Amino acid sequence: MDNIDEKILTLLAENARMPVKDIAKKVALTAPAVSQRIHRLEKQGRIAGYTLRFGKEKSEHSVSALISMMSLPPDKKPGFLQMVASERKVERCYNVTGTHSYIIIVCCEDMEELEKLLGRLQKWGQTSTQIILSTPVDRTL
Image (cartoon, rainbow, N blue to C red):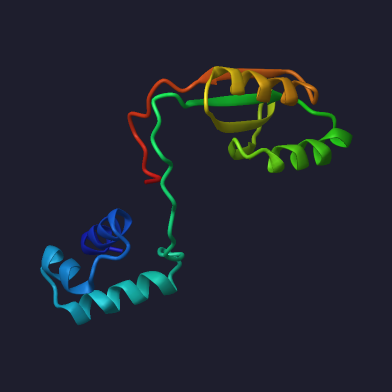
């Protein structure tokens, strides 16, 4: 993989629907050469697929948080995971190493909704919560 491949990946990450001819102009290659590189990157697994992500409606009243669940006994994990999967405010749940078993990313309408969600989670074990103030870097968009 060279600098041109890196530029192609960066352009596709910004806009996966960018036409090959536009990419070719930006990397100073022909469209067929760019198509060939993209095909090779796909075969190598560097490009795993193209997807559509729905954006969230921005609201000044939403509260995002990281909720860490302390260690859960093995017999509680299946029920806990089922409960987390059914919670519509849970965006992601990571199984992690260290003093916590899981880190959950949530987005709630307001603090009251976050508090209610925390109450439901605390039935499974001790939590630690960090409110997200801002996102200075976000490469998922």
